[in-house]
Length: 372
Image 1: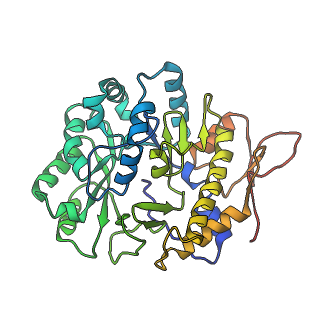
Image 2: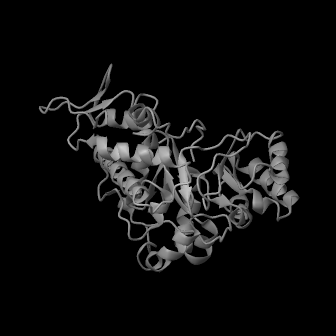
Image 3: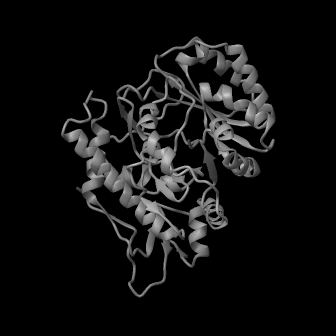
C-alpha cells in the first residue's frame, strides 16, 4: 500500500540491478501491515476480492486457532517496538466484523486506532466500515487508502459514495484512492477522479483485476506493474510491505491468510537483525516455489508473466543469505529509513558504504548475489 507508484515489472535483462533497486529490502523501508489476528481474514464479501477463495479455504482453522482471546502486555510492548522500525503502520482488519464478533479486540483498536493508517475499505467494506471511522474512532485516525472496483462503482449510488468519502476525508483524512480496473474506461471512475481534484487527497493508483491473468492496463491512472496474477492468485515482487500477523511475519497477503503456511519469521522476542535475514530467505524460498509452479505448468503463461518468473528463478538460484551477517550495503538500507536508525541504536555503526556491526568475524554481507 505504499505511495511510490514507480513499481516497474522485471525487464528480463538486468536481474541483479532489479533485485537491489526494486526488491531486496524495499519492503521494510516504509510500511508494515499489522493485525492483532494470527492470520488475516475479511467477511465483507466483495465481488472483486481476489482473496475470497483463500478466505473460505482457511476459515475453519482461522476460527479455531488464529483469533486471540486477549492481548498480553508483553506482546503489545513488542508490537510497539516493532512499529518504531517503520514510517507507516497500516492495518487492513475487518473492523465491522470485529466489532460485532470480537468486541474485546475491537476495543483494543479503538484505544490505539491513531497508531495506524487504515486500508481495509474496498467496495462493500467501505459502506459498512465508514460509519465506524466517522462515529467511533479518534478523529486523528488516518485512512491510508480506499479501493474501488469499476464494476462496483457502476452498480451503486455514486453520489452516496462521494458523500461518504467527503465526510470521511473531512474528519479523518484520506491519503489515496485505488481503482481496480476491469476495462480501459469507466464513467464512474472518471467521476470520482473529477471529485478528487477538488479535495486534498493526493494520490491515486490502479491495478488490474487479480482474478484474471496479468495484463497491462490502458489507463492514465498510475498502475502497479510489479504483480503477476492468475485465477485469484497473485505473484508480486515482494517490494511493498510485510505483514505482521500477531507474532508472525509474512511476505504477501495470501500467505498471511493461509493457515497451513508458516511465517518467514515468528518471534517470542523480536530481533531486527534476524528478521532481515529471515525475510530475504523467505523471499528466496517463495520465489523458488513460484518459479517451480510456472515451469511445471501450474501457472499458465499468457505471455505477460515470463519476465516475472524468470526473475523469481534468478533470485532463487543466485541470492545467498548470510545469517551471521555484519554488513548491510548502503544501496539496500540508508539514513532515510527508520529501520536503519533502529539498527544504529542497537550498536551498528555507519560507514560510507553501509551499516557495519563490529565483530571478530569481519565483514560478512547480508546477501551475496551471483551473476547467474
